[in-house]
Length: 245
Image (cartoon, rainbow, N blue to C red; front, side, top):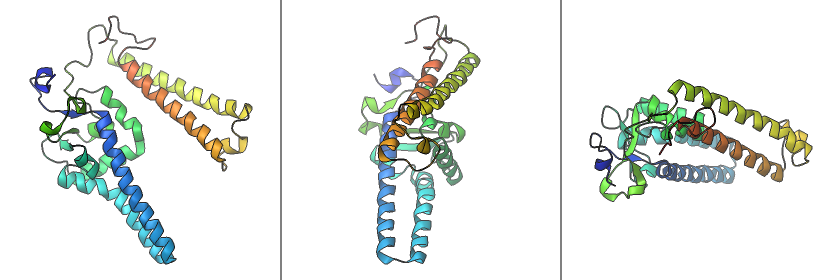
C-alpha cells in the first residue's frame, strides 16, 4: 500500500523503529571504533596528558557528533546509510540547539524514548516530540514499504478507554513491573544465582553480570510491552470494548 493511499493529507514517510534502530547501531559502532582507537593510542604513548586530551576529545565527539551532523546535513552517518533524515516541524533541518536537546533526552531515557513511536500519529519518539521534529525517509524512491509508516489517522478508535484512563493504567503497570524486578533480585540471591555482594553493588562475577543483564532485559521488555499494550487497549483494566485492529 502506498503512503498516499494511507493518508492523502500527509504524504510523508515516517521511519519505522527498526530502521531507526539500525541507524543507532551504526553510530554506536562508529563511536566505539573512535573510542578503541583513542584508547590504543593513549596506551601506546603512555602519557597522562595525552590520555586526558584524548579522553576529552572522545567525550566531545560523543556529545557533538550527532548535533553537528543532524543540524548541518539532516542526519548522522547512520541516518544517511539507512536513508533517514531528521526534519524540523517548521521544515528543513533542526537547529543545533534542538539537536543537542535531542541527544540529551535520548541519552537520559535510552530505549524508553522510543516507546511513544507506537502511540503517536507521526511515529515520534520522546526526543522527537519534545523538539518538535520527526524522522522521515530521505529518498522515498530508494525505500522499501517496510522501511516506513504513514501517519496514523486515528489514535483513539471507537470503544477505546479514555487517554487519562490508559495513562493511569500505564503508570500502574510500570509500577508492577518495577515491583517484580525488585522482588526478583533477592529471589536470585536466595536461589544462589547471584551473591548478596553483587546485589549490594559490589563487583560481580561474569556469570552474575549475565544473569543481571538478562533480568534487566526482561524488565525493560515487560515495561515497554505494558506501555504499548495498555495504550492499545489490550490489557486488563483498559481493554477496548471492540476489537482493536
